[in-house]
Image (tube, rainbow, N blue to C red):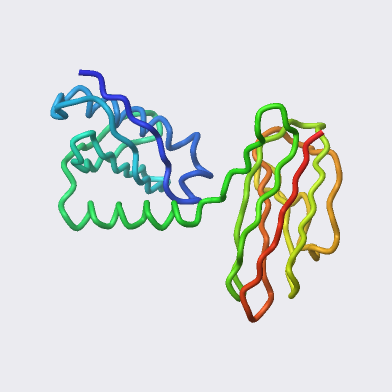
Length: 203
């Protein structure tokens, strides 16, 4: 039976090490499919824990069973077992926490090169967005708050800083040095909740 799994990596560290973790994920998926224990295809990778020694992958099959798999960067799998209740609950909790912290993707409507989103930030809170673009395209970004103090940071797809912390009163317009997801982090420095409107255009 083939087991199709959606790779939903949990945790910034796992995402950063994706090239090293992916062979382990692939090996775990193959090992679980070979077991044939799932009654139907489907499932997802809900959590990954990377280390130099090896990676622990938590898979949830279409029946809801959580599997704990340990393997190495060459794709060799050392163990694959049903996770006990405590390990399964911890994996679900980490996955939920990561999902809550994941950046919001800004998508453009068909035929449009820009978009606007409005959000509220609690006192001292920060939020992140990502938008895909190609190297050489020009990003035009403007943030309009309803008052208070806010700043924003732009990061390149590789995590390097494109624009350090800058007051939202200063818009950004410039060519992008890399292809991939640009990260926009908006940070409130106010003591009360504030809303803001973020407008982005890619040319």
